[in-house]
Length: 92
Image (tube, rainbow, N blue to C red; front, side, top):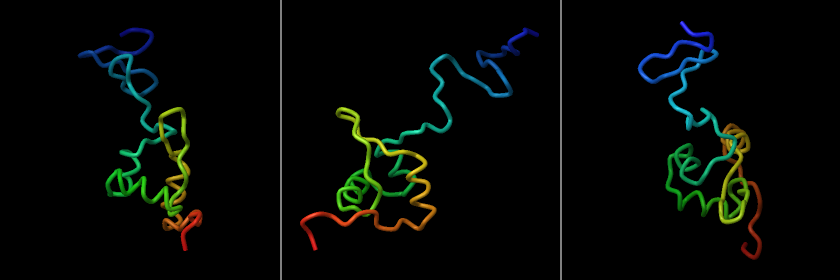
C-alpha cells in the first residue's frame, strides 16, 4: 500500500475515485459541444444548431471558432420543459 492510494492494473485510486492515466476528463465538463447537447436532447447536431439559431433554445457561447453551451444552462432549460428562449429577429 502506498501513501497516495493503491495502484493496480494501471488504474490509480485517489480520494475514492478511480483515475485512468493523466488525460482523464472530468465526469461533468462545464461546457458542452453540439454533439453532447444533441445527445442530451436525443436529436442531431444540425437540429441543435437550428434550435439555437431560431431562438428556441439557449444561445451558445462562441470561443474563437468553437461553439459551446453551458451545461447548467442546458440542464435548467430541459428541466423547465424546453421553453423558447428568444424570438428570432426578422421572422414572424
